[in-house]
Length: 364
Image (tube, rainbow, N blue to C red):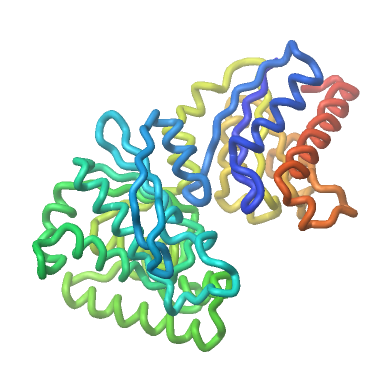
């Protein structure tokens, strides 16, 4: 029996690889005849860089950028052998870079994301895979476009001076599972602003700012992509990439599994184990575990789903997951449960129980 592990990160707790390592240890400790194959995955959010870099065998580069509050920090990106840059925008403007009491999307800027793009461009990259997610910003990508102009346009120049080279000479592919428009009741500020520290008054101002930026941009270019699905991703970075750089938006999970050649790894006598921090009905709306399960189901392979917390268990089973398990005990303190060692131990215990259950039922 071979177990294929494709588990998304447990956000704020374990990376994809760390979660898979805990599962693998539990499986091989239970029976060393079992084999495991670890495939770190990401839908474009937290951990995107390492997952995509691993799938594409990219080298990691470190550069100095300005974080969300314009403090210098170090960020990483990947470069493949064919000159494709792998950019995780959260490396430069992620929520984890800002202390909770300091979070303020009225101030937070995506400038550092533009610096990452400019750095990769100067290194000769002309193809970009960009992960959108986990941002502290809601500036519609204005900061990013300022940085790209500052770093790549002639001194004192404008974006138009480099627009053709970037739009025609480069290809940007965005990885995200967000389908929200830029502004409005379902836009970046209204939906994601509160988790970034936005008050109701801030949300109104952020939404108005994004709308004004879109109106100005539409007059300049002659078209408006602010309502395109994904424009609201990463505080509006999705919009800036599509409107200004001609980027193509793709479902992050599908892109990840395609790049990892996931389908070809599904062979006879395999069981797939996937997971995420919190599984519920929203898992079935295009999240990584759902795409993993669909691919496995198409080849007749069972899929186990683990998560820190599970709601709507029956809906998940009905959708096609063979087994569903919450790894965090019901009586656990959440703060303690989210510590790396505790989370890993809880995963190991949950996998042992699933293996015992499967053995008893004489199934997978």
